[in-house]
Structure formats: C-alpha cells, structure tokens
Image (cartoon, rainbow, N blue to C red; front, side, top):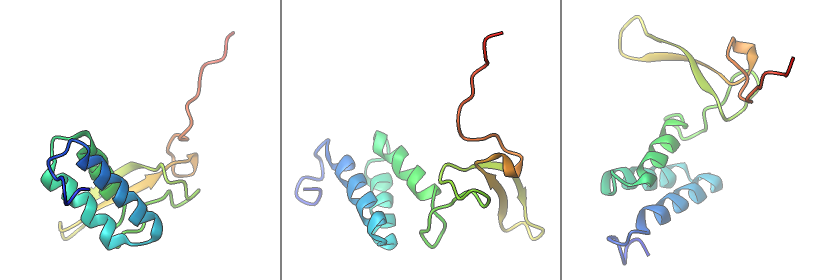
Length: 112
C-alpha cells in the first residue's frame, strides 16, 4: 500500500505499523528503516513523532532500552553527562525507585 499510494494520508500509519511488526519479529534493521522513512517522508505527521520515539527507545543495535534495575520498558533519563572526551552523552536511566527515580505508576494523595 505504501509503495503503491505514497501520498495517501494512511501511508505514515501503515509504515509505523509495519515498523512495529518488524521490530516484534526481531528484524531490527527493517524496523529502523521503516521508522526513518516516516521521519524523512512524512516529518509533520503524528506518526513521525511516534517513529522518533521508537528510534529513541532503542539502542543503536536495535534492542529496546530498559530500566537496568527492574527491566521495565518505560524508563526515563535520571541524569545526563558528557563523557570525558566529549564525544558521547552518558545517561543514567530508571523506571523504578531503585535508581532514585520515581516509580512509573501514578500516585494520588489519600484523603485525610
């Protein structure tokens, strides 16, 4: 569909779905190619934002970034710093309280 109708308003959503299917199958290279195509060909679409998140949530080898303590997929950056050489940014991540981060679940105040 995407190759036949690249100007269709459904094309970005189709590419995003294909990318997620490829990622689920372990075809990391194909998944990254689909997400990158969305960003390049449909940069203003809502799916482009999703594609950016998909790419950002994966390491350069395509494996998902997870909390190093609880292995939860919804991690967040707790601390960032530049390496000594200045060529890389080191990020400390955590989804749970183990890294000093707040748990990923929302909490509400109890009635007093």
